[in-house]
Length: 270
Length: 270
Ligand SMILES: [Mg+2]
Ligand SMILES: [Mg+2]
Image (cartoon, rainbow over all chains, first blue to last red; front, side):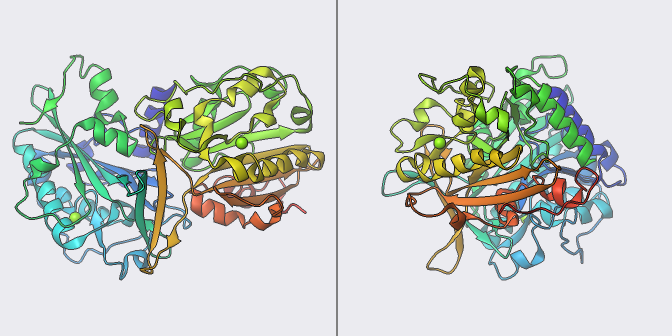
């Protein structure tokens, strides 16, 4: 049933058309170890990350990464002069293009950050594919507070030898004066790429004894003061699941299925 | 690669957990004959239709049906006293409920119409599952012009022995006074079920000689005058594909892959 199909999709994603070979230590990375997020459509597998593409939004549903002490501490690649490239594996009807972002006022924001994949030149270059981008507010968000969160996640490998990260866009409703709830978001460029209202990050820290701890964040795609603590954006995991439509990342992998033969209850990372 | 995976998903959907056995002639119906729409997440297969569920919208991405002269002309089932039921196969985080529609002002609108499946009581009852519903404007749309379109599709079996239909919600952008484009839609109930701005129907008529003809419609989820001709809502197929994020229905099945060993070019149904 569902699990067998998910396993097939997983295997197809890792072995499929779009997978790229990548240098060590990427070969040992396993971004989906803690589960394949539900609604795993249009999977694309790269050296350092796996993503699910949303044809309607012209961008990813989520991007999964696996960071290790080794991968975050090895620097053999550089982002200097690396160009952004369109994802030719996406049908042209649904593909976001360089044109879509041009003069939009939004940054081409990495979902899997370039700085997570400095362990090889090929891996860092693969993060510049447009299917890994989402329109982000530049100053005050992508270049500032969101980057702070990304740095925080990388530093977690000091505590947890393996860190699994799932990042994606959200489109959250607001209550309007008529008392009803509406979802409203801008679309940019000729292909109408959706501008998310928020972004989420779910981080799983795996200790040497295989026990796991979780942090979940939701941040608005907006200017956030540089001195606002990241802990302000911590949310219960279920809030991310309900809004993103993805439950498997942790819900099934950690709550329902005994983890590594032991029933580990996830706790918040202290 | 993709095709093999699609085939697996197809087979999983038809054989999977959620499939229900159904009486003749449903056993001979093949709603996906002309292709599995791309982005085929969360498939659920019923006697008379196959749907893909969208966890974020709490409703279907699309519903595929296969109508035949026999299935539309056999009346062994009735919708009288058939209750609407929640889809227990959908995780409770993402499931739409009876409560969501209550006092929302919107109808529980069938995507696969009950009237398409009168050939058996079981088949007609299965269309009352909430995953086959979308919030629709009642008077002037669901009960009127949209029902006119559904009747028109059933009548096409007079001309085409086999009719394949794909129906789904759309969320289309509008240009606002600031010159930018926005997608905006209401969400209803505790589970925030998305109210589509439009609905589409792609209809494939298959003649006895196996050649095929296509009609594609987009109608706004709004009051439409009873005397407005359905032909006003005909659109190029590609418009549906681009907006729905689904390309396979016809694009791959009819345009790219030679149909039944002959390169049939789809034409509009006259
Ligand atoms: Mg960034
Ligand atoms: Mg109806």
